[in-house]
Amino acid sequence: MKNYTLQSNTIHIATKTFTFLVWIIVPLWSLGGFSQVSGTVDSTSVKIGEEIRYTMQVQADSTQIVVFPEGQTFTPLEVIESYKIDTATNNNRWSLTKEYALTQFDSGHYTIPRQKVMVGDQVFFTDSLKVEIRDVVVDTTKQKMFEIKPLVEVDASFFNWKKYIWWILGGLLVLGVIAFFLLRRKKRKEAKEKELAPYERAMLALRKIDESHLLEQDSHKEYYSQLSDTARKYIDEEVYDHAMESTTDELITKLDEEIKSGSLNLDKATIEELKNVLKTADMAKFAKSRPDKGTAKADRNVIERVINETKEAIPEPTEEELLADEEYRKAIADKKRKKKILFGSIGGFAIIAITLLIFIAIKGYDVVKDTLLGHPTKELAETEWISSAYGSPPITVTTPEILIRKKVQIGTKKNPILKGNNVFDFGDRLADIYVGVSYMNITGQRKNQDAKFELDGIVETTFSALEEEGAKNIVIKDEEYETLNGAKGIKIFGKYNIKRPKEDEKVEYGYQMLNFVEATGLQQVIVIYEIDNRYTENIAQRIINSVELRKAK
Image 1 (cartoon, rainbow, N blue to C red):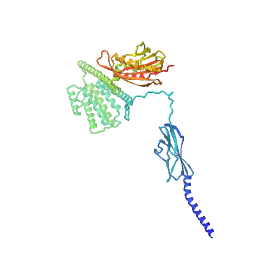
Image 2 (image 1 turned 30 degrees about the horizontal axis):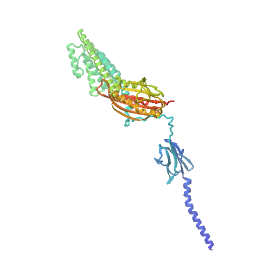
Image 3 (image 1 turned 90 degrees about the horizontal axis):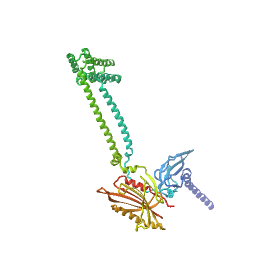
Image 4 (image 1 turned 135 degrees about the vertical axis):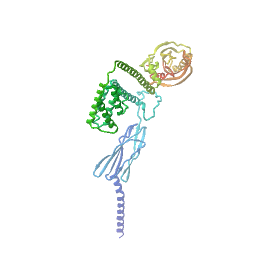
């Protein structure tokens, strides 16, 4: 009995244990089997700035919502692009693939942190990954080294208008030229019409009314307005000089008076027809009357007939009147010609002045003045420069003019080891710019250290010569210098004041002196330039930057 009870209790305990394990293991198995998350990278070692492709894959049920990480969750790496999710389906399962482009601009070893993914109501994390960001190796033996460029002012505005100023000015210039020619053409056409006789202008005006198609456009007001003005202008010029501002009744009364006085041999029926057309025109202009097209065309023919008959009714001018009229026409023509010359001159001067002002605003007054009037130093800077080698070992210098060789013997007690000095120079030390290259041989079995010892004496000799020429307030600075091809030397630079002949005020000069020490001698490049000259400093710097020294074989 006891054994049976014991077995029964054992079975009961085992059953409970199995049930508990099922409740624990089944959810875990469901998590692992039905929702799987993984993260991988295409490379664990890249160069600075290169892209790392991080791929995240999720296996989930099709009824579950999956949320991938967004934003800068990959710190210390930077997300440069987040790609769209690629979805593949298999029965009721989803296979989701999400890619990120990562990068880093500092070398070192980094860890991509675990990424959080939401699948339904559950949270999953990917494994952290280690990556290496490598430096870019530069072979300094093959790569040319350049000096650090000076600071340049940068326009902080968002829109760099100076970059587009030439396009804007070009467009405005083209529009200005087109507008000029259109206005000129219009004025010439108007002037040509004014040169016509009153009768010819009236006939031309009637033809323009016919070609305007105003009746077809139902513009009766404009049609009758032009018709009335054509008749009034002709009468104003040939019969009554107040016809334009007179009312219709006033104009007809004046014409009747001219007929009675015998000045105008015109039929009263013609005057009556003119009166009717002008009355119709007044109704169309002020009362918005709209006569039919047949009546309007008939009124146009009446105006033409009135003009023709008025022309025939006007007595022929006498010879004296013709001569007076000819003289008047000549005077008017001369006046117009002089006016055209005046306005043309003013316009040309204005265009030149505006162009100059634009160039001055962009380039500056001094640059424009030097471009127009010429400047010797500016011309020197813009000429074709020459690269030449001097001395042995050769030192290469690019200059605007070829350097001329001079022979100077040096044998002072102060520098007994200097056998001679080969000098190549250009310009004058008291002019805008001076360039000199010299090679100093050393006699005997002296070593490189001994040559270096002589540098102080050479520099002192150079400044002593400047002092003898009258240089004052000499500022001397020095620093180590290396040419583009790797030759090392000492750069001495500074400025001084000196009074030039026939000038009252002292002129400030700057100088740069490169000194290179070789086993058999010393080589020197010196550039002296006037500081107040706006072109010499750039010339001097260009010469100094071009210096290259070849090693002695």
